Amino acid sequence: MLEKIRLDKILFLDIETVPQEQSFEKLDAKSRELWLNKSKFINKTPSDEDHLYNRAGIYAEFGKIVCISTGYFTVTGKEKQLHIKSYYGDDEKALIASFKELLDKQFYKSDHMLCAHNGKEFDFPYLCRRMLINRIKLPAILDIAGKKPWEIQHLDTMELWRFGDYKNYTPLALLAHIFGIPSPKEEMDGSQVCNVYWQEKNLKKIAEYCRKDVITIVQLFLLFMNEEILSDTQISVED
Image 1 (tube, rainbow, N blue to C red):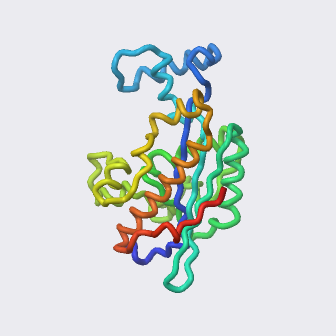
Image 2 (image 1 turned 90 degrees about the vertical axis):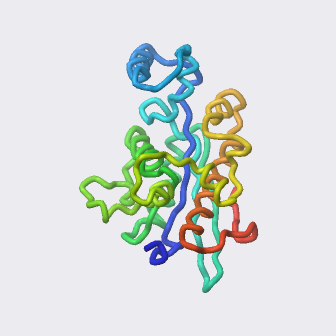
């Protein structure tokens, strides 16, 4: 069925998230109480709360988005070009608003789709939750309330790889390895984003990592379509 999907109708994306504060101690009293309650349900080895708080970024209630990287195709005949753009910064509301503007202008029709790796479990719901928290109206392509499953315009490369098998989580790095696709996970991984943001204060490094993740997702999706992966000349990156 994938061959029926037009590449220029898909927005590929990846997000990077961090805890809202640099450390557990910097939380206000009520947030500390609520985090302690939440963290009871996290599978963990014995550790202090400050170390465990490094994982708060994966929860939309305790984390924030610091980068959204996107990729979309322009297709002319048999030639295709992938355009990569990242929205990143300390001001979460501003970067989400810029991303929403892209959706509202270019990806708002019923045949448009979003694609991410594990997007249905993480990226898409996280984006929606943070949009609501920041008082940003959900764009139509993310607002799935009341929609039937076949009306939801979301693709997920992890779900595609499952082929109906829901027992296992398959990370992007593993799929990139077995398909021979270069992966940014060789340079850093998601568990390091918190320290790169709060300790190194290097947003550009996070954005570069996030962009490479999007390119990896695109290359994987092309292989799922039985198409050749892109060459470097077919990828343009907007600063």
